[in-house]
Image 1: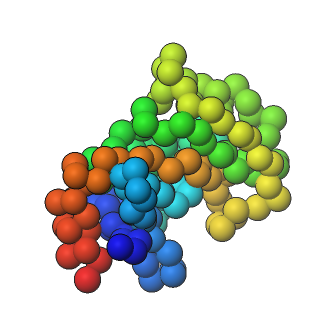
Image 2: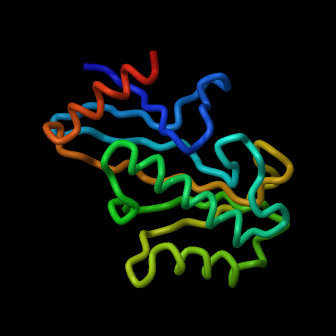
Length: 152
C-alpha cells in the first residue's frame, strides 16, 4: 500500500500548489495521518486575522482540527506541534500562549516555537505543523476510500 491523500472540505485545496493537506501512510501498526502546516487562510485563501498573531494561530488550529476531523481524528490526538513564528512577532508570547490555551485547555500537546524570517505569504505570522496522528487501520478504511474518490 502507498500513501493516499485527502482533500478536506472547509480548508483550501492545496493540490494546485503541489502538496496535499492530508496524507495517509499505512504502517504495520495502523495509518499515520500527516497534515501540512496550517496557516490563517480560510477556504477561499483569504487571510484571517491580518496583523494579529493570536487570531492567526486560532485560525491555523481551527484548520488543523478540520483537516484531522476529515479523516476521523481529533486535535487531542496530536502529540506535538511546531509553531513557525515570524521573527518580528516572537515577542508576542502572551497572545500565542492564549491561543494555545483556548484551543487545548489544560491538555496541550508538546510544542516547539521556531522563529523564522518569513513564511509563504508576507501576511502569515504563524504556521502550525503537527506531529503525525495514528489511527487504527480498520477504522480508517472507509474514509480512505472516500479520500481516493475526492482526490480523483
